[in-house]
Length: 114
Image (cartoon, rainbow, N blue to C red; front, side, top):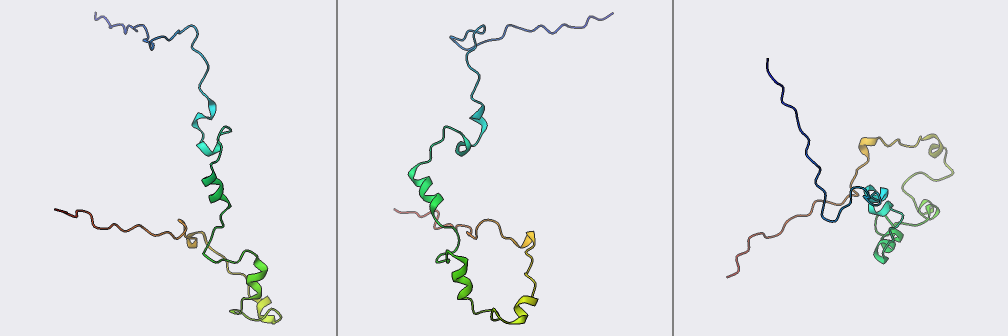
């Protein structure tokens, strides 16, 4: 008959100055949250400035009333054809992600300057 070897478990090794009887406080549960979602996070001036900046194309009108009164591309407001035309539906694949910012092109790479 064959003997099955017994796996022996050695003593665990702890860091220098660590007391296993008194391990100390547990790690912060917010440690795995993104930095901006933590309760202790304070925004800098730059973050606040970027958050308050307007988004969208340069020179976009802030109010919807101003742009609709200046829009002469479609039929007049009083005409019957404007009310009969349904609003165009935007499909999910038509929405372009990435904010329209293109890929940055590289310049001259290995410029020997001797």
